[in-house]
Image (cartoon, rainbow, N blue to C red):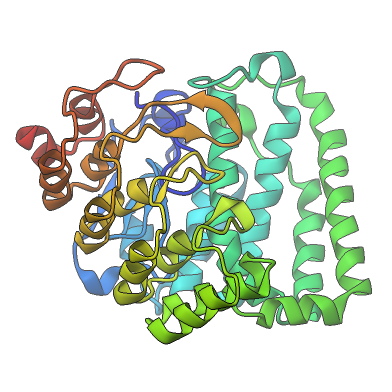
Length: 410
């Protein structure tokens, strides 16, 4: 099993090694056993949201590995999305929250955004309830099922929430109605023991009480929406850099770079912008431009002005890891490496002082971008590196995740 990656970049194989997925007949099996890892290579199929959460979802492709419904979620179209949602709703009590988040992402990308908001908040409710009923003493740390699932939840919230919430906040009235519908689901308790057989949970007779507590927190959110509708609407309409960075000059810098406005970047720097400003989630302007799928010219100019692709943000990853993970475009990584990007930079995890020790080569392997792998080695990446947790090498991860082309290259 590869070590945990938090939030952006990747999150670990919690279900692969620790949580069995559920088939329609209720039998437990692993994703590897039913070959349910779904992949597609057509650029036209790429998701609108650039998200990479190992092993569950990669927008490049997309690649989907949530066990049951993986193939359907990969192949779904705008025309078939609502039918798939109805099929999945028929198995509501046995859906893992990871599957629900992926459904939300696919709906959003296929222009069913109102339905995506509902699935997003339903997935959030389910994940929060699962965490609430975990036996506290059993959650453990890196590698334990409960810990891995908590990290997966944080990653889905951070990466998809930025996009889905921005849409939802534009219509506080509709958001309130959606939250109320989700909150009413507290009466339907999922079959958590079946969905997550390797996670130690508190006694089932306590689950309903925990569901009420989660619903109470959602009610507080509903109250906030009621009392702050105008503010919420304004936040939803604000440009990404406005929400990301607090200092006006840093916002100006990020907004100029994302569209390749070099003169605008210079003006922002003259106004005191920090080329390595740290915004929400620890993102820097470089990371912002990458996630917005912005201008490579703007990205390169930031690097020329001193932007550092080795800064770890809140997920424990850095821009150099993200660039290495891009499934098809190697320009981002090449630019980072040409401007002092460290090919052997070891990742951390979340806000913990724990270095997982996974280098950009791991990310390139998991995306099977052979050009990125070659670039990293050309710039000095160590192919024999092992991480700090279970001493797994890039080759180990390639075999673990069935990345055969990458394994053969290594």
